[in-house]
Image 1 (cartoon, rainbow, N blue to C red):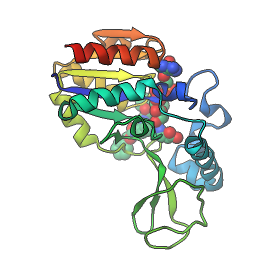
Image 2 (tube, rainbow, N blue to C red):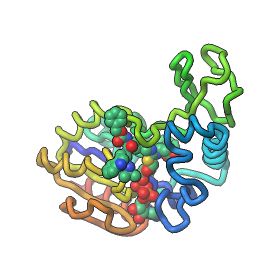
Image 3 (tube, rainbow, N blue to C red):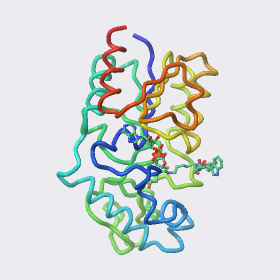
Image 4 (cartoon, rainbow, N blue to C red):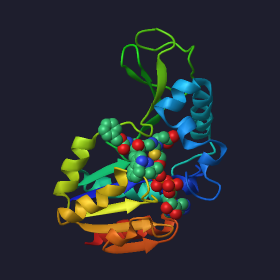
Length: 233
Ligand code: BV8
């Protein structure tokens, strides 16, 4: 079985009812990116940022949002070849895990976790929280922020990600517009190391010219088809 690295973006969760960022009715419309997804925006107006993420967390934990056939197809591939499949996501939702995937590398953080600036602890949080909420570890209030990588902050797991990309045979990008770096640069890195590159998306991304193989359509159609093809290899 080839060594596969998978990168997903907001498009894989679109059919689960989670808005993407840059499509017409994108999530960011209600807010300017720099106001809600940057350390400066959080310092300037923390309550707006707490509210922005509390609203997204409430939607994620509601019954309305479930993992879809694209998430479960990737979990099927991982189950069959767990040692050879690395799943990296830019998404902060837990739909890969709810679809059956394990060891998901959330390079932009996780909506259902909070980080305490006082004691550095990262803890699970499924409810609303704000500047008055106590940290579950050190019990101090006022230090909690979403465990999310904002613009201008270093994404998580970059060393491991680069190691996996350097060693992979196949790199597949699913449901991302290829506009946010360093994630959008992973395909060029994979090509540099000789991997075969696949793009599965609704439409060509900003980096589609880097891909050897492309299949465009809704993720719940193109991803199961791609997984069947990989399992048949
Ligand atoms: C860093 C968490 C350095 C927040 C996010 C100028 C040029 C190049 C780069 C930069 C620049 N200026 C600044 C930068 C760097 C910046 C960047 O790339 N900016 C962009 C906007 C130009 N990057 C950063 O700041 C990163 N950090 O560079 O640090 C550094 C170095 C040293 C020391 C310290 C720091 C950090 C970036 C992380 C930001 N956080 N998310 C939150 O979620 O609230 S990014 C955010 O965008 C999400 O994580 C999201 O996943 C990500 C990427 O978007 P996509 O997932 O691609 O979503 P999008 O809507 O764009 O596309 C969806 C796609 O799905 C579309 O193509 C659509 O067609 C498709 N689709 C839709 N429906 C379906 C579908 N596909 C299939 N089926 C469907 N049904």
